Image 1 (cartoon, rainbow, N blue to C red):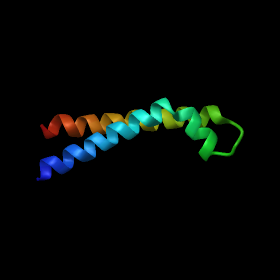
Image 2: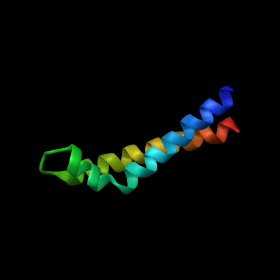
Image 3: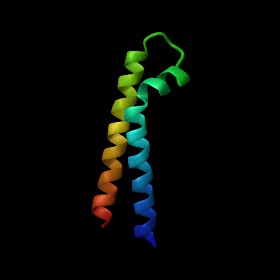
Image 4: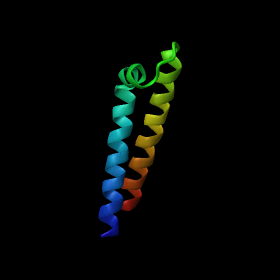
Length: 63
């Protein structure tokens, strides 16, 4: 049961990380209102990469 829960959490983290990486520009335009969107975009891409990496590690070590 615990393996299934960890697998689902890992899949959700990976999916959210990939969405943050690919849609960072759109998310930055909608959420953040300040002028420099390049910093927000790169921050979201870094956050997405870290989330995807953590999710992949959870999945890898769970199996």
